[in-house]
Length: 316
Image 1 (cartoon, rainbow, N blue to C red):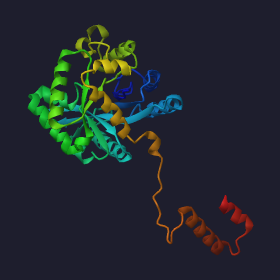
Image 2: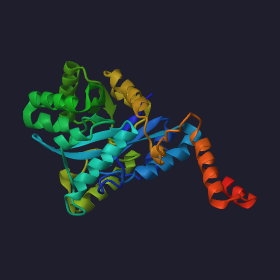
Image 3: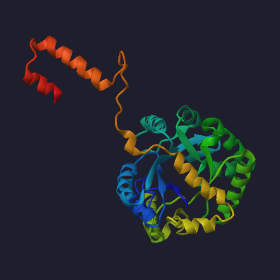
């Protein structure tokens, strides 16, 4: 079995191709147990993704994980850091970080955090190394294997070794596979877990054309002149577990780690309801019992005598 832990929706700055409902429907139909939606610098599609997953869970027990691709400026240049919310604290930290970065730039301008800010808000988060726009790819591009090693060591210092996963994607691209080999080498050296992903942008292969249209809208280009701005193929669709098993036959642990990581992601949007703080009850007993006793004592002092009508209203 396999869980897709890196997908985008059409709400991500016009860069995704499928709506959250389509992603959930396709993932449920092919038997995926879970998926994470990571929009760019926000949780734009997360509510609809969560609601669709709740409806789907009535029949397939599908889990919707929460996160974002956060733009971060580092010494190797800007990169998109895929971050997953492991706990409620992680979600709160990510919300605070996104708010901080967006408040210092004009509206509709892409924001970015620093590595120091990321470290300040790292508790409860899990970091993936991303695709060709991710931090590891950028480091390898700028400074080779040594820069990649330094980047991973820095991420471990920020998140701890248990919370950094070296992400691998395979879209039949020679440059990407060379990058994967370097990533595997560094993961083995630093004893970091590998994670198979497909960087999903659309539910099915035919929807790649929608992604191309969104890309042209953002870049203010026509399809005929967009060139390399468009994806080179249609491989970023939701693959079946069997397809992923075949593609990553040489790295079965990378597939197994998707389920392991999914099991660690305890937070969901279902847990956003307000939780009242625990009130210290003198002498034991429950908070409800203490509240009832205090209320009735105050009522007896207020009404003198306490009528049946007032007592019934308080009880209600």
